[in-house]
Image 1 (cartoon, helix red, strand yellow):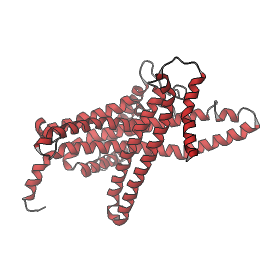
Image 2 (spheres, helix red, strand yellow):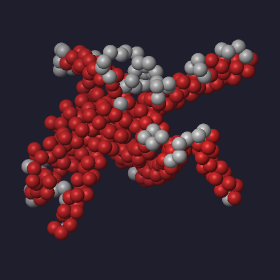
Image 3 (tube, each protein chain N blue to C red):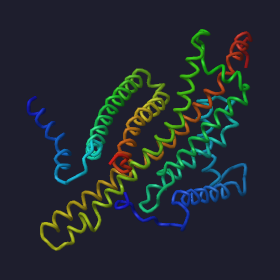
Image 4 (cartoon, rainbow over the protein chains, first blue to last red):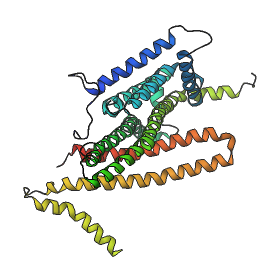
Amino acid sequence: MDVIEHPPIFHLPGIPDHVTYTWIAMALLSVLAFVASRNVQLVPRGMQNFFEVVLEQFQQMIDDVIGPEGRPYLPLIATLGLFILVTNLMSLVPGANGPTTSLNTTAACALVVFFAYHWIGVRKQGALTYLAHFTGPVPLALKPLMFVIEVISHLARPLSLTLRLFGNMFGGHVLIAIIFFLMGFNGLLGWALSGSAIGAVGGGLGTAVMVAFTVGFLYPLKILVSFLQAFIFVMLTMLYISGAIEEAEHGEHHGGEHQPAHH
Amino acid sequence: MRALILAATAVLAVPGLALAADPAPVGAVNMIGPYSVLVAGFAMAFAAGLCALGQGRAVASAVDAMARQPGAAARIQTAMIIGLALIESLAIYVLVVAMILLFVQPIK
């Protein structure tokens, strides 16, 4: 792996790369948030306007998936979404080892989501009711089996969140690293500059094709995958939170049907 | 069909021939190293093919539904994107295992 890795742009001695770039992402987001919220006005302009649009999109997604009672969880969801988006886009730059290309960051985000949605469910319904709703509407004899199956499926959720985000980002990272290795002075470019006629033609053509392919196809694909993976992470978080909260609504639906509809 | 069987045997024999070239210590466990590279390649190919089939079905159903009810197109598209990403994550798990076999090389 070391032979195809790119030396990082910015390296602090003694601190792992993904921590350094996490700090850079944190600094970037903090500066943007400070600029946006410094002079809050009724009619937003500039950075405040941009962030209001972004947060309104998050708000709309929460309303669609969880419903109005999901609004208190907007800070958690928007922070996760913006952090993962910024760190995904950071891994596009060739020298920057984005944090999400390392298993540590993605596992941290997934564990935060795991503990968050269980904590939200327990706080909303109480521990015993929440655990009792794990099993679902099955007869009493099958409840222990369903409980075990549900526990396994709940344990698989942070694992899948981690591996999905890590695999997508790390796969793209390795792909770009291999292409740079193929194009470098050991590869096509070296062949083009080596002085032989076949080398000039073949190496030049190969380099041109590779550059066009990378800039024209791979980078747009990687940008799409960055946005998509951040969106999927946030969407799954919202689905898990809605699954943890919704058990409390069995009683409310029964109560709501008896009231006449008036606005 | 016979050509396919011959080709498959040839491909599977290459790691064995590679081992015969250098005098390795006797032990059945040494055969696993080169074969793990082969397995990683095949596993990734299978996963990519099956993932493509699944995603093709998902997109086909989504496009049919959008053609039937253009008004619901936005919600169908959202559900389609989520479904595609979840199907793709199964192929990503195989990619992670393949990368472990290739780069971490737990069994030499």
